[in-house]
Length: 166
Image (cartoon, rainbow, N blue to C red; front, side, top):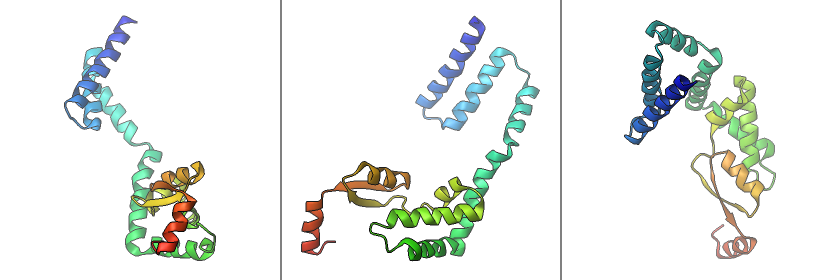
């Protein structure tokens, strides 16, 4: 039991020291794992076999390919067409920005076969700063799409409309 505790302490200690030194997380994990496997006495061949076996998991390999598919669709203009189609379907609803993004992600998920890939590939609202009503639902929706939702009171909306800002 004490040897297992020592190995865990070595793993975490090396990891946190490397992170504190500014080493990238992936390299810190790799190096800490290598040091710990040497301490435990695991043969290098077994470590390499487990690394290769871990990379050959098809569900993990699918994630970069979904992102690649999203990039290809974006460069080809398909995502713009999906967003325009979504806007024509639900754009008439008041406050339809979230609805359009949801429907576009729905279509992308149907095309690619993964709903999570649609959210990551379309990302139509990433980096936008959007003023939303003071509601936790609106703020959470904007956050889920990658936008920064800023609450706005109805009095502010009325004043902005009078001055022509909105």
